[in-house]
Length: 131
Image 1 (tube, rainbow, N blue to C red):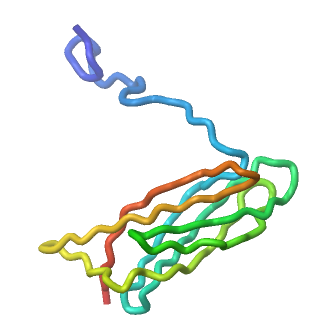
Image 2: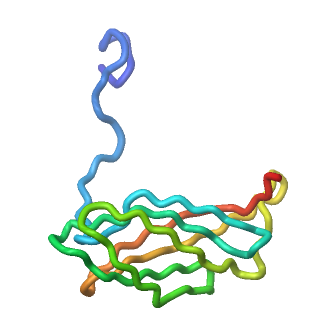
């Protein structure tokens, strides 16, 4: 009768618990992505690290969707290894601010396409003015 913490393990067990998996990614894929909504300028800044595991620079296509609003046709060149990129995309006009009484949340889905392969990422966010 042992678990991660019990009398039988004499303290904390430093093993791995939870879902563990290996995920195959395309040769050009998203790394760390941070988003910064700007409610007053109706825009969303996306700061992303894009990874290129190919042996040469690649020109890739990016797409961003917030609800029914799509921003397509953005092309950028990414170097081998990691390339930091920044995008500014428009927010839909009907976006509402987030607060503790009205926790309005939205989702941005983003994709990077290279040679017919697509890597996608979804991030949930809210807009809040902290001035």
